[in-house]
Amino acid sequence: MLFELSNKDLSKFSFSLFRSPFFLEIIEFIRIDCSTGCDTCSSSSVCSVCTSGHYLYNSACYSPCPFKTVISGSNCVDCPGNCDFCSSSTVCTTCSSGFYLYNGVCYNPCPTTTYQSSSSACSNCPSHCDTCSSSSVCTVCSSTYRLYLSQCYNPCPLTTFPSSATACSSIYFMKKKIYLNRLSIKLRYMQ
Image (cartoon, rainbow, N blue to C red):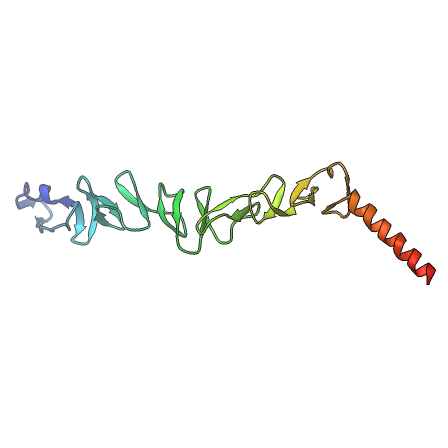
């Protein structure tokens, strides 16, 4: 039988002899020196309770918690994946190199409807935009919306028409194109 005892508890024990009608049992206590910052341990390298100001992580005591971990109660817990610094086990505050922070999570690349706004963060695209290069320039609109002048519309704005399933075009541009087509036809006719 293994007993977990703290260094404080061991000083209180004396050796005892127990007798029963069937056997004689001698209990021997061996003093285990816990590592620095550890209050209760089962071996010198396996801690289960840390002293005040120290935090348990992988059976060892730390003050402060190791890199890529955060204090949670009396323990250190891992930060989320690809995260260097965090405020909890689920919320990142600084991503590892090559990853971009968005809503407390690290991504590479930035998720749909966002864009890489700095060397370390993602930001939201404009409304109804799936892919963009900045907060005001959309390149691909969400389903049922059409792109016109880097923005998404449903329906197309005034003075425009749906030129495809994904884009609106200017009526002015259409009139100019028709005029050029007529001019082209006239020139061919005159030759």
